[in-house]
Image 1: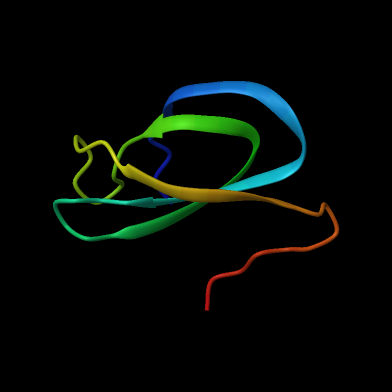
Image 2: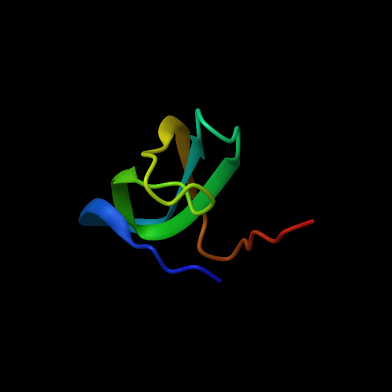
Length: 68
């Protein structure tokens, strides 16, 4: 698993915030589940390309997300 970090993270939210991102270069679609609000991040495939924000939602702490 790559741990590239986020360019900017701020304020802890109650519950987990899921943000959806898309890379304009390789067309990767990324979902980030975090207790911190992510304002900007980079593509784990292209590494240097900033991702385009697509949306977010707050998930309840008892629900889990998994890869399918």
